[in-house]
Length: 430
Figure 1 (cartoon, rainbow, N blue to C red):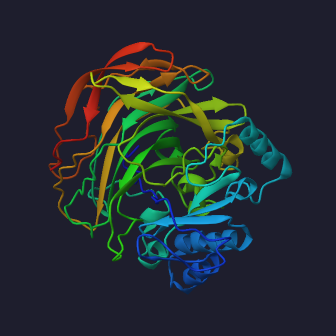
Figure 2 (figure 1 turned 135 degrees about the vertical axis):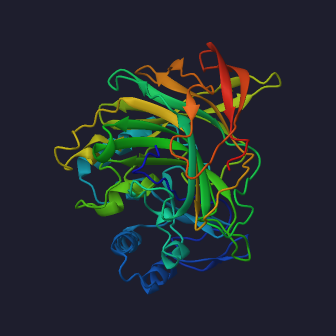
Figure 3 (figure 1 turned 180 degrees about the vertical axis):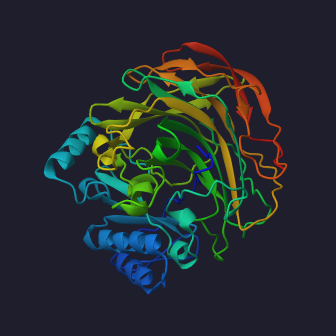
């Protein structure tokens, strides 16, 4: 949720092809770029000058420490973005935890089908934060930051289009979902790939508000922060992401901004490797659901297909992993433990860094629907997607957006039919 206190920034990565054994040799990626070994990657991170950048230094040092412990079984790369396949128990959220936590996660993994898309069964794909994110001091590559209650924001143009009224739920017997079409085109918001930029299609599940907020978020990020072509120029890619803040996006805690990182670096425990967070996706559609269970907040993923009649069909659901409840402990009385996630919103965000004017025509992506599930994750209801329930809440200057709404039918994986409107990202922000 981008209110006055939130900036949404996320890491993206790529998949496939060149590989090495434990990062022990220098491989050549198909993109034409060199794939750094684990040790070369660590050495490159150590050489970056990050004076007066406390939070980036902390993130870098934690990254160096992680790669100093982990066994990399396989490395794949495309477009200069790297995914390391690591043993299940050595993913970031499990490598330094107690035995009981690790064994519980492993039990869940063994109960789940390991559909390896990028990494083999028994491995989890970990996206490397590119060295250039640190070199260029792109906080966007690592954190969400709280920001001043002033527009425009320091990092340039920002807009969003969001459900203006939250859907209220009871987290103990209801979950939430968003159904998203990633879109087939790679929209370049500024028609200049050298400007750091991203847009998101996502849901927000919120506990509290303002300086007491905690959130669960997921969706699709389209960004040029982390992918480059063979000449080193930034290119746009899209991927599924997860994020959760336990502390209102604040770095003023003992955990610092490491509590507010994306994907596996943020503490998400992945139990099925069907999806590699950050790996690029094409014109794909998903239902992404969050559901509270006894051990934490689980992410369920279902593919969606679109038939010739313009109707959507939801496929089988896979539990991908979870944010452990213990992650939210220790942040003081302002942040109840466990948090009580009660408000759901959904929509789009656009962020264009280092720009002073906003003029863009993204032509990519559709919000199919969002709403509640029951305690098993089955869809309970769709929230209305219409012009009366969506709107820009804090667009800077005189920005406006005219979206497209289209009628459709959505069939869940039990063949229940819902008459819905879809919300297309195609339109002009100006």
